[in-house]
Length: 174
Image 1 (cartoon, helix red, strand yellow):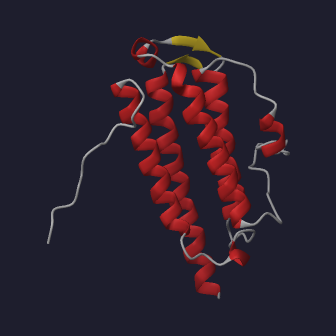
Image 2: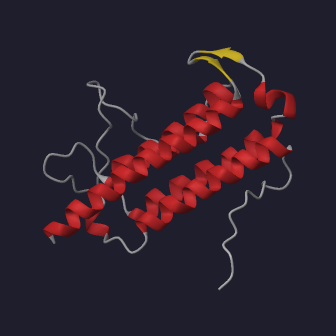
Image 3: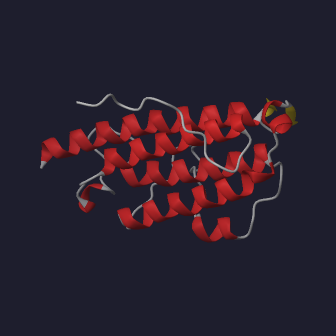
């Protein structure tokens, strides 16, 4: 039996620290996708008893927050036009709950995640080694690109746990 590869493999074409953080984001996403593997499409819109969100709403939220941190805090730029096409609804309701996202297939949710990540990897290429750890003031506060990438990994991992709990709860009802 061979030993597992428990190494970080920085994404090629980026400064080393940024490449390593991007690899970690990609690893985080791979784990999320594995958590969705084989899920029945009819579970995507369901909210378990006592729950607040559906799996679909969480996937929409994950993609939207990734895009928001990229443009608002890493690049400190206006949102590109393509975002309104990919995100037709606000991510939160007026009551600050996640917007219920319904009648969207798992494939559509996964496509949205791919679109956002593709833009993320392309647009973050402007970040230099110096930029990666340079604090700057944004609407979110004093922030570094390094912290944003850490936060996005944590954010996705936490919601992946929620997705797994929702899936278990709904599987028990089936």
